[in-house]
Length: 198
Image (tube, rainbow, N blue to C red):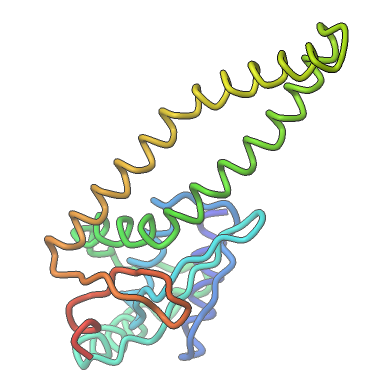
């Protein structure tokens, strides 16, 4: 899947316009590596969105002169990049920043989705468990509520980990000069120093 996804992305990049890449259930690490590769061909990260079962990675042409030069050089140096030929080595120094931006872009929505995905089955399982061991509706609901509350307590470490990861990502981005600004839909996002002043 990894190599096929790279080639698919490169074929889209060759068109020269904005790209929306359906990346399936790729990890943040994989998505950051794809973006690093796209940067070698004149593109930059725009956004990451999560659907029901897959991520969509949004990339836009990087219009800065140095990015245009690098893209022309790499398309010339790696003419078979879209067909399985050799690829340039990405700049791994940017990996942590890209991953932090992606985590930051998805953090709140992802955490809410996880809570919903876990909470609904827990409620149903708790009701089933209460029905197996309870004698009347009062005992069924009591057992179900206790089971659900216990499961929610077990989810707290996941919530704490998510908050800590979000704080670390924000601190890394802000230390690198990124600014948190609302986008057109009101979602707070970290943008690079050049974009924040534009």
